Image 1 (spheres, one colour):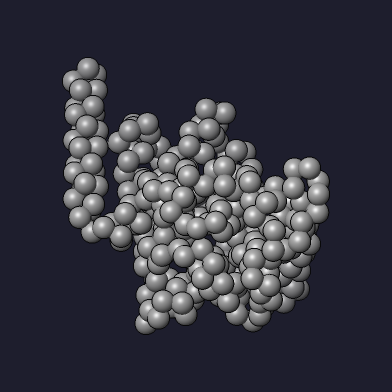
Image 2 (cartoon, helix red, strand yellow; image 1 turned 30 degrees about the vertical axis):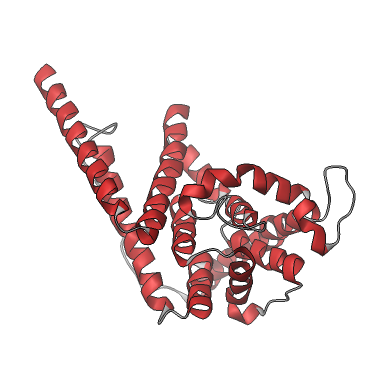
Length: 282
């Protein structure tokens, strides 16, 4: 949500689009469609077989007590405060540190952030994201999107926090917290020259890729073995990369939709063929 609202607002402000609501709704709809297609894909590939029955006994529902509500609210508040003052704060400090030092540990002023450890790491992996629109086609500051997405693996809130820090270093910008990072996104758009299509791809990538470390830990605990866990991670990465690439390429060059449609048909036909062969063998 923080990524979606900030970037959708930045697109409206910078490019004059009519409404951020349409962008927000479209991205949520995309998430639902991708989830359904993922289920269909898994049920017809590596998760074939009979679905075991799921039976869950419902507890008796009663009117909640005020004390119970306060205890539950306090528990959630403690969790958020702990997350905000540990993971998010610590990662923000790390971003500042590696963005102001070179590999020789020489301190760099804000205007020389392009020589920092953070910039060099971002530039190294930036070409990988060229098909998604926020790779090598951007100017010297394009690596900030790659670095922000990587920081989102720790906690998704870090993406917008990274924008704020890097915008302050690049253009001496001080954001308004009340705007939820929209102003920082606008500064990043101006500094990098990124297109609206690439920004939508960036949102989709962060939404569909590996979630925060806490969610990854939960997935690892729920999955049966290491192979299933690794497969899940690869599925997250592959899905987010492919869908984001589709958004950028089709949004930039509409005729590429025919290529992706043909590829989709080929994949469906191959899956049907393999399933038919398995049925004949059994």
